Length: 253
Image (tube, rainbow, N blue to C red; front, side, top):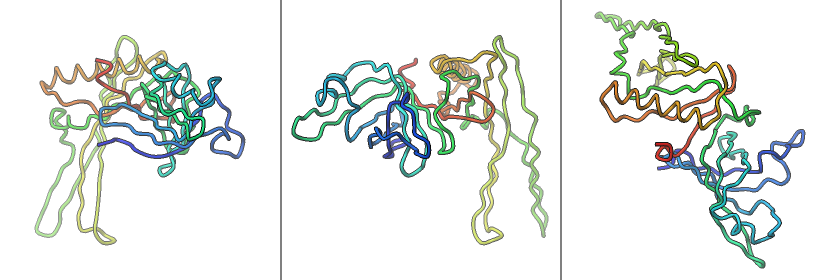
């Protein structure tokens, strides 16, 4: 099952987007698929022009592409940035439709309000610790009940901060609630969650952040004695803009 499968518009990331437009005139429609293994595929309905004309999709097959692709997804309005590109063939035709496909080594996904990062260097990686709640011994939710009332209290624990050689590791605790039913609700659920944030003194390239992510995953697997994988990380260049990062994990082991 795919993590994301959505159509959108795509273009070379170094192309300027005209004012009052959400994509350049050269954009091409296509389908973006991020598999549950993190591999990203882009199937375009056309091809980005090249000196080889309609043969361009076949010439690019298997080639490393020294460019990035930016996109805007149709339904979710999310912005995406595809890096580490390899041509994946397509169809070349002089009297029919020519199109091409790509495989991306990394895909950054942000909401519609965030444009592509102005830099390829980031200072923070944030990883949800989904599945590690029991090992973390989260117990900040207190429930008391009587014949007439049920009371639930939650006091968020302070972040646990650990200095590292090149920054710091923080464990951030929070809660996630959900209610359903009528106006005042007939059901309520509250769950404690946590995330790990690695903040670095110097900005790192995406491939170096992925390496740090893998080291954190290995550490947790050793400490917990489990084989539970980490959730997909978020990366941040500053304090506001964050991007979900997907990549084929098996390719970085």
